[in-house]
Length: 486
Image (cartoon, rainbow, N blue to C red; front, side, top):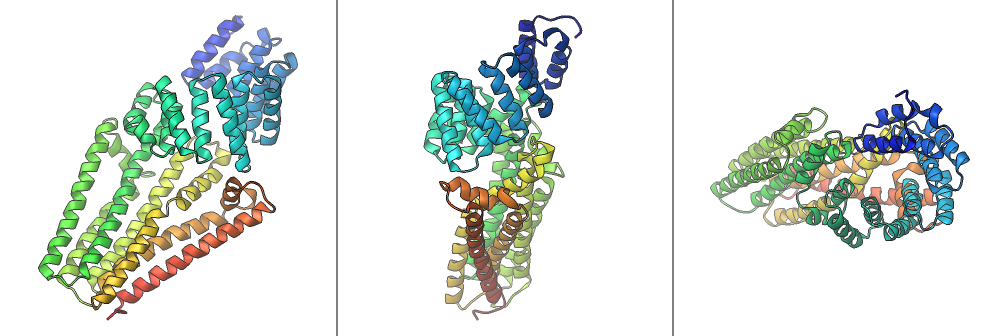
């Protein structure tokens, strides 16, 4: 675009291109008009924001500083500089500037919105998140638009105010039912699905509107991985439930019928859930995601192999019962190894999706942090399984013992060990202040002395507890499998 274009027309075209996610075209259009509008602050604001969206943050900072030099009193020029500084991870500078904008433009909602955004980006400690939420609520009180609703929901969720987040989500979607940010946030809030309905259907609608929406695509793709994850857990429950049945003094025929019934029930539930999910996803999408090598293929193979092993192991254990270990018991133990490996593959694929839109230089670190967060926050099922294993050992000991009970307990130990060793590796691979235990301690405490050391000590205590559970469940299961209760 070589001819002179009126700045107002240029601004309108910029808005259209950004809405269509054509950022590179917006940058090219604006750079072609530099000679005609270099004395106008608005031009440099538009260029600075376009460059930030295009991840050219150094150039964006230069453009933003040109705009500030031309109009130092305008909030939009300083906010453009805040964006460029955030892109360069210069959080303290960005937050200091954002506070200055708030002080001089207290009635402008954008000033409070970007202060909140900057504090969330830094989140040095919990106080950052609390102040970020206060700023987001103030921005919402000044202008109840979709962006401010989304930021208020996001920050409420980050400080664990799930009830408030859900109410804000309801209010926001009542005003802006198609707002993509609110729809995407619903998956991070407890009971968020009750507000928005079937998320897969909504996300599919977002993708039909804009096929290049990477956040919606990543969220939608994770639905297939969540389905596989549930199948893997159900396979584990299937194994444990059969182990309970196997140690009871039942006739061989009854045990065999129950084993086949459990397998049939599992297949029926898996088929029904697959059809339900497939019905709300775009046609062919679920099968495509499950077949992708980097996403669903390995976990799906783990589901299939584990189910065959559980079925074969339970049938053999039912047909050939006995206090000593048999082929069926060995197959059940092998199934537990496959289930643990499948769950690990699912978590890796989910983390890769979550960081797919992160900058290249931060993707590895973000991947580790996402993996760590997902791992550390998902132990509830494992604790219940450990309790079930203890009950299983009690029943096994009171019924003169059966190696299948030991196989069930050993499956608990195997999955606990795989998960805990993964958490241990993730805990030690990130040094310094970005270590996840240090970050977690900072976000759950109001300051304190030597937070890095305290965070590592907190992590060490937690890991020692998990390792003790691993040892106890594995050793007890192995002992019972070898005939320790006979």
